[in-house]
Image (cartoon, rainbow, N blue to C red):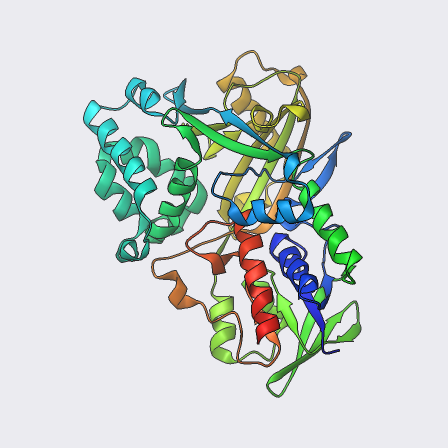
Length: 429
């Protein structure tokens, strides 16, 4: 039992933990509640096309992602493409994402455009995020861009993702999102994003195969109901009514769920985990018979739309046909989260027709809806102060989720990098 480690969750972080453990000579057993690996990167059969339930892309700064591709010998599966952004505002589709588009943008004064552009530029040059902790995100963005640019370009994006939590978000968290996209560019006028042949499953399957080839195991459809703790040491996990004994357990599932399955945690740590707020996600994916726009990413600011944007994935990866994702975010208790799939489908169809009048119902070949209860942690100012160390004061127990690589936003590369470092701590400690 000394080198056997239970890993809870087979998303990118859990896979990274298991991958690094087998490289260090350990034997991970990965327990996953779903019937497939991947978490938010998992794929589904979309009428003959295997594709991710939620969209993903890669930036030039994704070093941890590049490293594991190289180690697995699949770096040649990564492709780069110059992509375009757009903005839907005042019932008009406009170019976006570079200085020329900003200058031509209709709906902002020249002064507001200058302040917005300066903020975006400065954000790419900031390396130390800690001084930003004294601001909440709204205050920091408004301080730079002013009320006019904030009202037009930022306010609706904040609200359509975080609703009542919008006024208490971390400035470093917002900064990291601006910087990641801003630095993934050929030059000032062209952004550069990447995709894998076959999508994220190319990497996920390669990691799974490597883990299994080196002694690791996967137990799908095995939701953990309890992590057993006796005294101050972990002793195993319970799933499907069966106890599996382990002296080391690493949990990578959302912190509120970890609190539920670890009833014997110290009270202060359990409270920290339970108090973590997450935004739920509803993602609509549509297959069209023609392009919607020429943009990969289309920001939206329209009173008749309740979405922050439209992602036309096929304008990044042309191998998939004409695929469009429309993400909805909302607090988990928002009544909209319980709306039927048909409600979201009809709204999305209406938005498509607004953006491109050539699109009619007959041009939408298929449409599906996926939901994820823990889609996005809400990171408040000074967020690290609300997290215990991943190595808990219980012998053999480590707990982390995507909150732990703050201020970076959740992402495949960030999860891989953090997961591998966490596995090294498990081995070292």
